[in-house]
Image (spheres, rainbow, N blue to C red):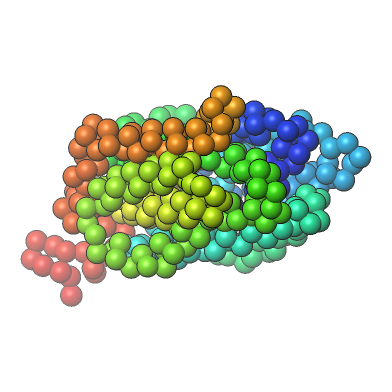
Length: 399
């Protein structure tokens, strides 16, 4: 997360261009699509822990390249772009395996709690990382930020090394284009799943403001502003996660995904109307809370209703929905800001995101009606995952 702040800051510093910062998202798009789908297929056919370990080593090497580039007298933007593309490729390979581990090792009744804990971990890092990163970049420069990133990757590699293997199912097929097509067909036929992907994709494309943060911070001439802007959505998300116990008692989870997406868009639009940076931070925190609620319910829909033999490939599709969106969102936000200014970019994007969620609620009734207490897919997956003695029979539960 420190490098997440340092990378666009360095590009903005070297070029002074909205478009150059937004181009980071464009260059990451292709690798995410290709390797996200392929990484999903691999997650269903090889040891998921090994995939995470190998890609983590790759991330450490790429951070080392960023560090070396920042130390030369004239850092090259093209090096940053190449590293961004390679990082997107590794991300596409890693995340399906990482995400597909959770439903394998967690009891269905505990998935809501596991999702909340995972979100808590992520959001804590998302708050500390950007806040610290903003200070480090402002005080010590991007080289120090990249050096810290290398060290933390080495720590994570050691931690992952100690995890037990998570091998594939015995009947798992080898990764293939046919397997990827099978996963995409499954996603297309399940309109409730398709709705979760479309909602998240649209929310990020229309209302992802991250590429604007370096320029907003520059306007306020506050060395702490950059870190606070990056951290604000995670603060809201962390608060939402801390009080997320109620989510496990909600069965109509599709509706909650839609409601949260509407709040996300309206909060981003409100940020464009903020009279000062403090109100903007509040709006970003509200948006982050809404995004986290949407993410928790999307995760539960996925983990409760997708069979394990397809979980990796579906994790690849999920990766595309929540990763491609921000990349395209950076481009949209950058070009909108260039055309009409930062306020115009925030307001127009937020209203489009909220409007899409309303349309989706009408166009995708399967998502609106999703109820995990009655959904046949949830029942089938639960029967597969529970121990044999816990499965019901026609005569009643097994003793």
